[in-house]
Length: 125
Image 1: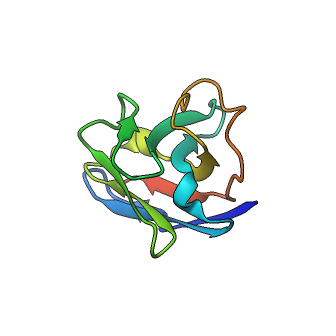
Image 2 (image 1 turned 90 degrees about the vertical axis):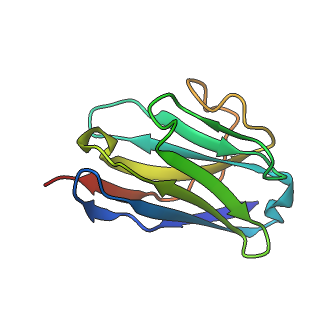
């Protein structure tokens, strides 16, 4: 079983940037796609991005396209989410989870597992 720990959240002004990290331990992460998800208070969970096991393919929610970039370094057992041009509506707890494949990463999360505890991102002036 994989164990996931997210970090890198914080308070940032609109237009600012943050880089989140997702450290994966336990079984080798080389075989797993890693997704980033977020949930704001009173809102449903939302899939933000996904990177497949090889790192060659990534997918993004429409809200993240052009602003967020996910990458992975399997030697460091870490997946990153670089977030630029942050908006107040990006405020949420951000989570990582693992799956064999990226899809689906929106709407149906039943195939995703090893959820981390999350890291809070707050975008506010």
